[in-house]
Amino acid sequence: MTAFASIASVSSFDVAALTGFYALISSEEGVPVQWLQGELTALFERPRSQIDINDYRLSKNAWKKLADEVVPISKWIHFMEIGSGRIRFSLDNKVPDAWLWHEGAQDPIGIEMTIAQARERFHLAKELISKKRGRGFIGVNDDAPQEAFDAKMAQPRVAYATTGPLSAIGAGIKRCLANKNKAKYKGFTLLIEAPLLTLPRDRWSAIKGELAAEAVASPFQEIFVVSNASDIPWAFQIK
Image 1 (tube, rainbow, N blue to C red):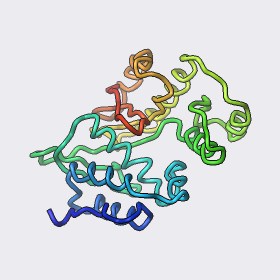
Image 2 (cartoon, rainbow, N blue to C red):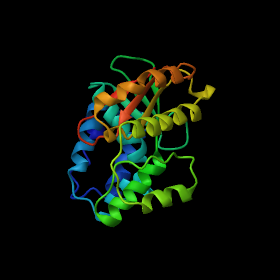
Image 3 (spheres, one colour):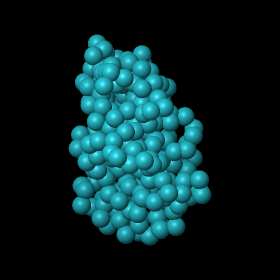
Image 4 (cartoon, rainbow, N blue to C red):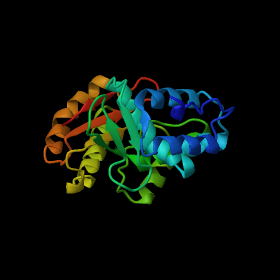
């Protein structure tokens, strides 16, 4: 399919390659799902400058849409074992963030993407970049004042019990549900990326019930919590 020839033959994955990738996945006809997954894998195998790596980790500049929308949706597609069909990303402020056409389906599924504990993720990434080592959890909610993040990051790394991440990250997921509780999302699929790597997979079953109860009133048809794992995609459904 010549219209979707690979751009991943470039020598490095830089902003120019990213811009070309964005142009294809946001085109009117979208791209085949299989092409998207293969292209992403190939692009990330290319060298990247330290500045681009840092911008991706911080979800800023040209790399923000890749980090906040494209890669998490790709992880969910992999987890759901969707190997065919077509997808188009909006890459703007329009609703939803992506449209997915299953193989043979006339009507697409609207996919909306959001991030739980996004500010915490930013501060943890900053620490990783500056100190070359980071921590996995600080337990500060996104609506906390900046002073709370500054104070927490100034403290030394400490061990944490299971209850801490379950409570803080669970609250972050609920905040995402509340923020997206709008009629314009009716019938879409909501994906919430959360720092699930903080705990072993089986620990999250402790809050699935309360998250599902919180999701009942949501206008979305389906809701999944997607792990931030970079290697093996994993998610669990709460609606």
